[in-house]
Amino acid sequence: MRTARGLPFVCNKTLKTIMKSVMARVQRDEKVELCHFVWMGNHAHIIVVVNDSAQCVRFYGELQKQLTDSLKRLLGFKHLNLWKKNGTSLIRYCDVDTIVERIAYLYANPSRAHLIDCIERYPGLSSWGAYREALSSVLAQHSSPVPWIRAPFITKLPSRALTEAQDRAYVEKLCEQAKKQHALTLCPNGWLKVFGIEEEREIEQINTRIVERLREFEREAREERARKGWKVKGARRLQEEAIDLKHTPKGDSIRIYVYSIVKEIRIAMLEEYTEFCRACSHCYDRWKMGDFSVNWPPGALLPNVPLTTNYFDC
Image 1 (cartoon, one colour):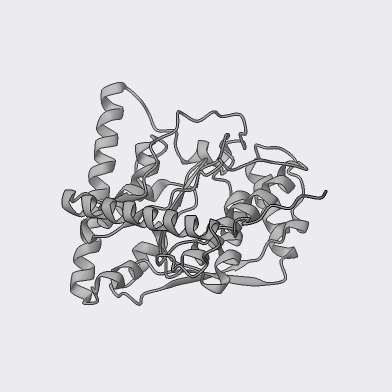
Image 2 (cartoon, helix red, strand yellow):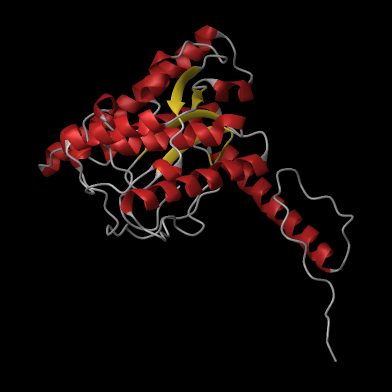
C-alpha cells in the first residue's frame, strides 16, 4: 500500500501505537492470516495468507480508511486524500524460494533505503521482533494485546514533530482513554502450510535462509553507502522526524501481479493470470447481454451488475 504523497508514517510512539491499534482492530475477525510486515514512511510491505479474495480487499480497504481517519484527527484536517488511487499491489507468490527472497527483501527495506544499518535498529513498525521470537512451527503465533484507539479520542497533535516528552505524554493519554483491546496476532510461519511444509527442522532451515539472505541485502546496502560516502539516517533522527505531507515520490514503478524468481513458474503464473483476466472479461460481456448464468473464475471479485436496458421518459 502506497500513499499518493508525503511521508506520514513516522517512527514515533504515537504513530506506531495508532497503526498497531488499526491493524489489530481490522484483523479482529481474521480476514487474512498475517505473517510479516514492515511499515516505511509512505508504504507498507505485508505478507499474508489469503483464503478469500473479498476478505483480503476488506482487510486493506479498512486498513487504509482507518489510517486516513486517524491522520485526519492527528493533523486537524477535515479532508485528506492519503492513498494513491489503485496504489495497492496484490502480488501472488507461488513457490518457497521466492517467498524466502521476498521476506528477506521486506525486512531489508529500511537498510536498503539507507535509514538504518540493520533491521534490529529500525524504530518503525514491523513484525521483526515477533518473527524472531516465533518457534519453528507452522502453528507458531505471536499475539499481543493492543489498545483500541478510537478515532473520536484522537486529538490534534501539538506539532507534527513531537519531542520525546510530548510523544510519551500523548501515547499515555491515548492508552488511558482506550476501554477495549484487540489482539494483534502474527503467524510468521503460517505461509509454509500452503506448501505442505510442517516439519520443524525444515522450517528452521528455511528461516535460517531468510535471515542469511537478509544479511546479504544489508551488507550490499552497507557497501553501497561506503562507496558513495553516505551515512544512515539513524534511529534517533527517524523517531524525531515530523509528519510530512509534501514529499513527492519518484515515478510510478511497474505494477506486478505475480512474482517468482523461477522463470518457468513465473511464465506459468503469467499465463494463468492472463487466462483469468480473459475469463473475467467473458463473464462480464455475458452479463452485459443479460446472461447471469455464467460462472466467474475462482477468486474473482464480481463487479456491479451492468445496466441492460435504457429508459426514456417521453
